[in-house]
Length: 424
Image (tube, rainbow, N blue to C red; front, side, top):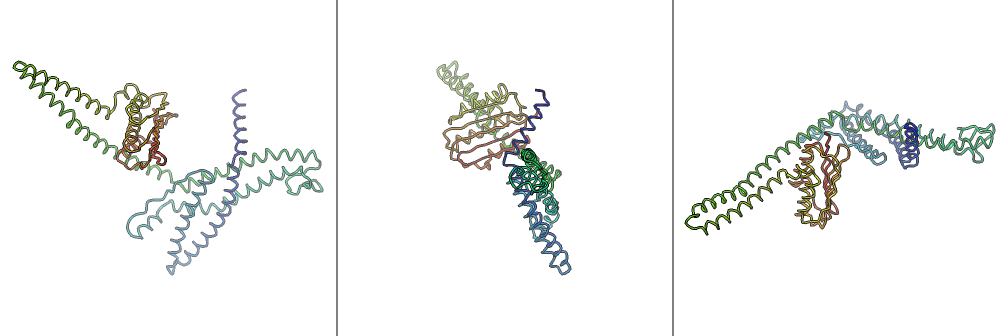
């Protein structure tokens, strides 16, 4: 079998699978609703806008037009909900944040928002689009059902014209052939319905969703905010590191130097006291090394640099008081910044599991699929995490600075999930 045959069979399987799925039924319902809602929206908007414009001279038209705008924005929200429920396409509302202050400023924000006027255009277009979809639905189903009904008694009249007017069969054999032809026609019609509502969803995304320039502007704002928070977090971490060095390892090294100085002075006069001071200095040196090792691990663990995510996360799990299962599926090492972000997501999440969750077990899953690394830490604790704490907020900023997504799911236990792009 050559590649063309495999491709053709793959298309045929998808066409049949689509026809047998619930998608055509949802598409048919969506198209029926589009016709009814489009008709209602067109009549309502024409009447309200005409009435508002006609009464502007006596100022009554202003509140009528403002109320009409509120209603059509509500209707657009209803359309977004209908598209999400029936077609599975999520279209976030693209409206500007209302300006604070007087009622006039808030109204000015709504009136000057291009998204409001795209909503109005969509609702006006819904009527002709709904008519076209209704025609496609009724004609397609009429043709398919008419062909399928051909072999049944009473479907062939004088002259061979069926009562549905879609076939001509002068014999039983011809009627059976037309009836069998109705099966592929029905499959084709089902796919046409699904394709029609797909086009509707694409058009709705253009009019009811955010424009490309708005998306880019919002994305730049989000990245700028997250990166400024990441810079502030890095400064806080540096100050904390300086305090930890000053109050911990540095003090121990000072004490070590004093003990060694005193031991040198007592070495000839009191060897036993000098020995005791040297032993104390030795203990101080070991404690200082341990503190320095912990500090370095908090900045960037050497095992992560040397052996990668699997070994570093396994080391975290081994040190956790809560039993942790680890599954890492990252065939190729990602860029260092991505690897570090994934590691610290796990480290902070396991710290929260130990301190706050009351969990008995936890699970860490890290997978790479294409150019995306997914990090998930789940526990069976009591929940309560909301992502607003400084630790989780810092992780969210670290992930956002890499153009990733960070999510906290709280319920029966807590799941922390991060998706980090790692294209290299």
